[in-house]
Length: 73
Image (cartoon, rainbow, N blue to C red; front, top):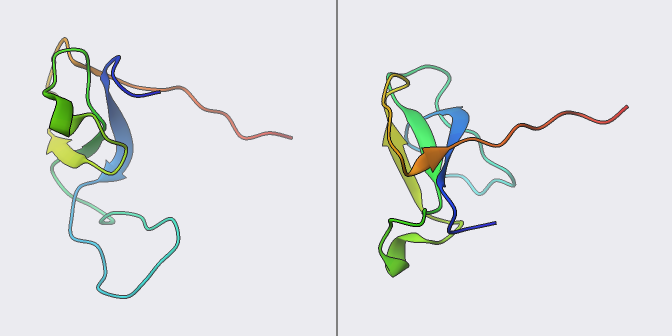
């Protein structure tokens, strides 16, 4: 799932809690959204699921995309 485009996420970018957590979420509000992974134009060290960057919601870039998901019944 990595290497096509960076994934623009719904979470706001911010610091994680210092406490251990499973599936942590970002900040409740903010100015930038989380962007994960790397795309076809990224350096090899960037193409990792653990990589977490950020962009403004109005940013447009040929190396950023999003994945549509839906909850099951």
